[in-house]
Length: 155
Image 1: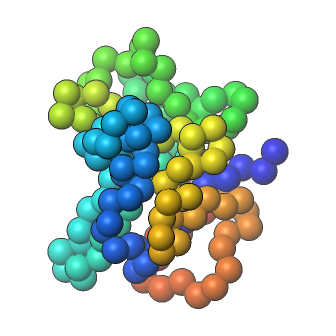
Image 2: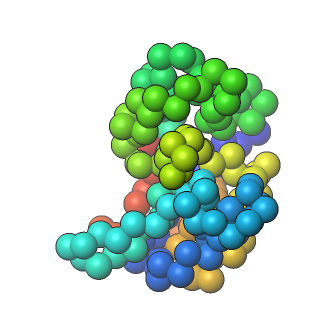
């Protein structure tokens, strides 16, 4: 099975937050961006809106940082997951992630994207194509610039 990952085009993101709303609707059954597994941050210097989501790194720093072994790569999907039974929400993983992909809710719970079973809703609802879910080795076609975040060689 070909490993997939997200490709983010920050220069396409308008900050509409539809991705966060779709994620929270699927996962929480309510429109609550604070409980979405994706976050949008504004890069003040350039005024870019950047979606942050798990990129399923080849060697995830979050796994290495987790002292309780609560973060693992799922044997079936190959995707990084959190075992909620083992996780104590210490947030060491949050600081270790170079892509700011782990979300800390207002209740201090750690959330991580699970790609909606292989068909991420955030990608489906993104009106500009800023979020794409592609084969890791294939990448995306078209030019990229400094605003594009290419995660294919993620650590």
